[in-house]
Image 1 (spheres, rainbow, N blue to C red):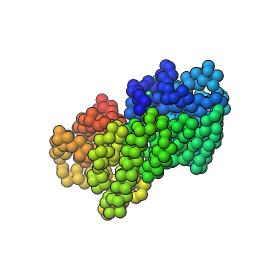
Image 2 (image 1 turned 30 degrees about the horizontal axis):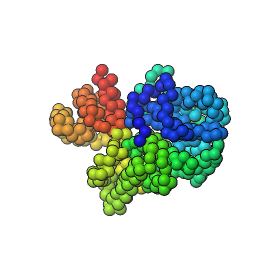
Image 3 (image 1 turned 45 degrees about the vertical axis):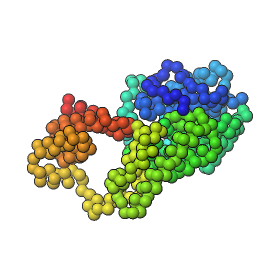
Image 4 (image 1 turned 135 degrees about the vertical axis):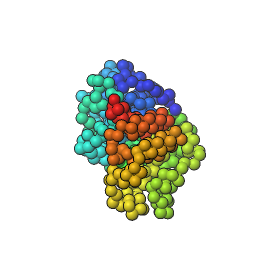
Length: 408
Ligand SMILES: [Zn+2]
């Protein structure tokens, strides 16, 4: 595995590139300022110009274009492995040279969706990534560059003696493109390959595709690559590629099959979250550390794909607002001190989630209850301190900061 850097600045001063072969280079960059979530912009040099894969950061791409200009290397193609912002956000830096911009046809619908839900996306990304963007560097300075060429199943072109074979895949998104360069034995996988537990489920965002993801990685393995460039990691020999991709394939198949079997057996989502645990060799795999996404998010996601919202309890079909239900319980207890005391007890016993939900008996009715918010702040602080997963930790941090500003 290529050295994976940490502490990458949002606005680097120089192009910190890494050489993979004499024809392939990459630069790791950060668009959200978090070590658990970085991305690679890579490029392949040919005799007739350069192909850039995932022009993700505008800052990095500007420096890259300057370097190409100096070296007299024209940029002929940009390829998006998928249309997430951290893989396309720097494309505008290359537009003067009028490169072909290639993406899967589903990228167009994705970009349209991002435009109509811009407010929502901005809000959830500020929670998910706990954005801390320095003044003067907005997360996106330009509207997205739309592809000039899209395709349905496959796309292929030659440039300067190298062949670029693209095929469609689904996994982290429905618009994934896998790029294979046979002369270099290099496969570019975008976020289909990450350095940790794959982003198979995201509590804020649309569907991910476990079943198809496994198929895409199997197809990539069958190519017998020597280099695999992912969204968050770069593998530089076939043995390692086999090891990492195989363990991911096993994880996707295991989770997919477990959730589908449980649904067929009449289990509900709550039971699945409790009962579907990873076998030890997957749970302990160094390639599947749950530092960005996590098991629970994956199970929610697969359930959401195949099942509806019904929880197999008649009260769950048309539930009253939780404010009303909590109101009844709170009135029955008739003693907020007892609720606070029990929540605190649970917190000290380490049952942080249960403590949080107990407090909701008050907070769902009165969100501005000072004592409950003070205790919630304490619970969330403990949750944030002990949670290794970026996406859930950032949720705790977001709301503990909200409590902080409310409490003054
Ligand atoms: Zn992505």
